[in-house]
Length: 272
Ligand SMILES: [Fe+2]
Ligand SMILES: [Fe+2]
Figure 1: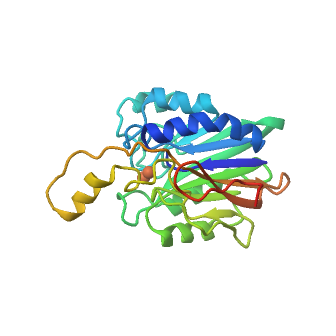
Figure 2 (figure 1 turned 30 degrees about the horizontal axis):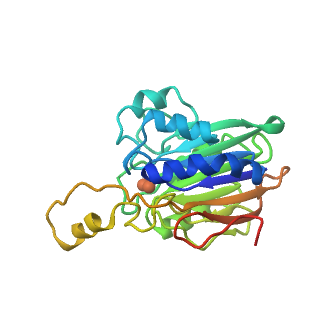
Figure 3 (figure 1 turned 90 degrees about the horizontal axis):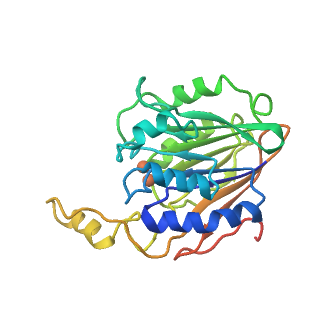
């Protein structure tokens, strides 16, 4: 199975870049499944239903959210009828939407995608470790599902690494989101799970995590509320990870970073 995960799409720059490039990437990398984190698609804050529709139309199979899940209120009725749009599974019981979805892919295979959110320097939530263990207990990698992709939306690298090692061997890919900086620690863990602590954002990197740098920097210089943060609108670098899995075991055979367009050094899977 050939999987692509794309990190946090930020604003118009990120949305347009993903919409431009994803159809070609699907063909070029012969992708079976594409998961896109879209929590910052709407001007940096949340996801509007029409933006979700556009990302699905461009070739995303599953969209994930995060701490910005509800910044656009219109997404609340939309998520209730869109099982392929996920929010963290460890939100309190009764929260709209779901944290996991099983998706049909080519060849009659099924993939489980789930999202959990960390708690270090983040909102107080139910335990992401216990919640993920409980969700995974209902599936068997290489048995009931051919692959399992987990988006762990968290701030701290320590929590992300602890999470990944806790579920090593139980997922095809565990990838972090939320910091908006791609980490260079992509690897296959000892029991066969591909891991990168953060996928990075898909947005303009001449910015402060995707937002215009002057307004964002002013907030650190002065402790008075500044002007509203606005997404930077230069050319986006699309950041993600590409993983190939073994069809029998569901474990990872390779993991490669993808960085395409914009200011960051370029990385295209299959060309190293
Ligand atoms: Fe984000
Ligand atoms: Fe986030």
